Every structure is written in structure tokens, then in C-alpha cells.
Amino acid sequence: MKSRGFSLVELVSVLAVVVSVGAVLGPSVGKMRGQMRGVTSEGNLHTIGLAAAMYGLDHDDRMFTFTWKANEKYFYQPSGSFRSWDSDQEAGAKQLQDILLTHTGRFTGEGQILASHNILSNRRYSHLVLADYMGGLVSDPLWADPNDANLLEWQLNPLGYLDQENNFPYMKGIPADSGYESDSVWTRLSVIQKWAFSSSYQVVPHAWQQDFGIQYRPLSYTPHLFQSTGGLVELGDRRFHEVRFPTAKVHMFEEFDRELAGEPYFAYDHARPAKLMFDGSINTSMSGMAASSVSPEDYLKRDKVVWEQIYKPFETFPLPLGGLGDQTLLNMRYRWTLGGLTGVDYPQVFMRGNGR
Image: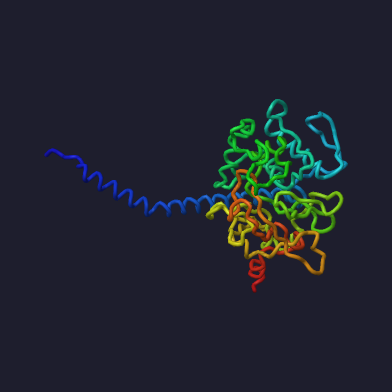
């Protein structure tokens, strides 16, 4: 008996069914894919937490951050001699350069790794000290949220900033559209070339600066730059035993909740960015459930003011939920915890841990 193929009508009917099923399942599949990427991101933070604990065991209980200090001599590869610097901030910038030179080999030429002068390296690059400890994973997917397409692209092509058609922020100067971060510091080549070695995850400031005294504080006009409260700030040398409530205190957090629509900045109350706590656990509670932030300069004041500021995006980064120029004030929560490492970010976690 001769078999027959599909008729045109049957083929069209099958295609219609396939399209219908796809239309029904498409959003669910997309949501599931986002959830799986979120799990991968949490896995990244869990691995980082384990490495951080190992670093502490090998470094007298210290948290990972830049260790070069002011007025101490270190072998500086670009000069081929021992050098010292006047501040922990400058010493840290040179250590960052040293780590990248060691693991990229980019000592000369157009792509030479430069020192970022007058830039607080601890702010975005403390994780590279841990990467160095882990064997040189300075440009690795471990540091990227799987939904952070920009960073993943930069990691694949770290010299892409030499191409004028790339999407590295500020290669063509400050964007014409108002509402973007506009400080000229971001147009420096020494800053632009380091985006490939950045991370989707941020370290809280008190993991690399002291809880009280002369510190860096937030600035009202930008969430991306900090300013000293007066004089030189002592950086580094924070110890894990200084954290009073490790289950309720954030160590690192996703800068954006890339699994939610609009990829909200972590400070939006409804955002649920993955957070590495100091006990190594992962917290995905809403940011709005965390205690309010307070600027370090107000820690000792009787009348403490909640610290709020607007989110201004970098070029190519997720936009505010209200669009460019959105003036919504956001509570910065666990970035600036009252009391620093002695404070509590998620009180409900602390209460559960104490059987209440």
C-alpha cells in the first residue's frame, strides 16, 4: 500500500497548532529561562562566598580587598622598582593595575593596562583581589550575572574599547542625552579599559573601609562616586569577626535585579537582587524589606536621616524605571548600613535566627 504525504491543508493545520502552542508557552519558557539564570547568578555568589571564606582563613580573618597601604614600598611593575604612595586609595589603584598586568600580560602597546589615578578602586574592583587569590580569574563569567549581556560581551573582547563601534561606556565622550552619569572621570581611557574586569556584584563599602571616623560617604548627585568625610581614609583590614550579625548583613549584592522587568536598580523597593550574606547564605528578599540606609557622616548623630538619592545610569546600563531623568529618590538600603559591619540589614532574618 502506497503511503501518502501531508496535504497542504494538513500541513497548515499542524503549523497553526505549533504556533498556538508556542504563543501559549513562550512567556512561560521566557520566565523559566530568567529564573534559571537567576539560579546561576545565585550560584556565582555562593562560589564567591566560599572563596571569600577561604581567603579569610589564609589571611588572618581579613575580608578581600586591596591590601597595598600608604607609605609602604611595593614592587611596581611599570617602573621596575619599589615604590610607595601617599594614600591607601592611590596604593590600591596601583595594586589593581599590578593584578591586571600580571594576569593579562598587557604591559605595552595600545592596550596597555594603565593606572586609574584619583579613582577609588575599592568601589568596583575589590573582587579582583579575590580573583587573583583564586588563580587569576580576572575576566571570568563567575563575576557576571548571566543576564548582564554588556559585561559578558566585554569579557569576550576586553580590547573592544579600541573599536569606536563598541558599547563600552563613554568611549565617545559624555552622551548628549541628559540623565546619564556625566562626570568626566568616566571618559578616561584608564577607566574605560577596566569595564571588562568589572563585576555585576558589588561589595558593600564597609567591607573595605572602617565603620566610624574618616570615611567615604555617598554623594547626592550620583550613586557612582563617593567622597571623603575629611582627610585620608584608611582602607582595608576589615575582619570577618567584626560582623556582629552575619546572617542578616549583606556582603555583596547584584547591582541590578536583571530577572525582573526593566532590570531595576537594587535600591528600588520591589527589586529582589541576589545578595551574599556574611554567613555565606544567599538572600533574595525584596530590597524594601531591608533596614533604611544612613550616610556614614550621620552615624553618630542623635537625629539620623534616611539616605535617599536618585539613580543615574551609566551609558549602556539599565535605565531608571521612569526613564532618563527620573528624579525618584531611592533608599540605598544595605549599601550604607547604619553602624557599618556592626549593623543589621534584614532584621527579620536576625529575629528568626534568634528564635523570635
